[in-house]
Length: 132
Image (cartoon, rainbow, N blue to C red):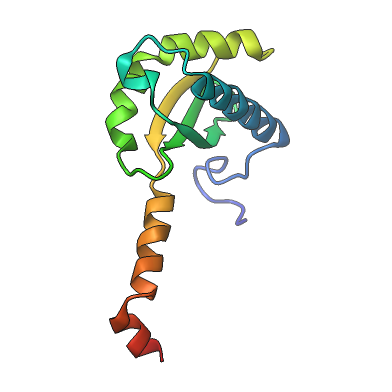
């Protein structure tokens, strides 16, 4: 890491506490999604996987990356997840021993889709011919 850059702190690696809290949040949310305890019909039967959580140093904001295994339409669930945010934060506050539950910002994790696309490209006849 370079030192002396303007905006120092933004490029800093997450602390052990951030990593621990982020993983606890991921675990709690994964459990909630596995139980399907949602009144919202858009979430009731959705198979949502929490792939990663990144939390700010002050633990007030968390970016939650979600995916749907075998499907690429997770972005369609983002409005429903936003509606469920108060319920999810209340569940987090109950499960975690923090002064406050962080604001949750759900984002579609498209890294698996991208990896599958790259894999398809690498196995296409044109690329195989060029590589061979």
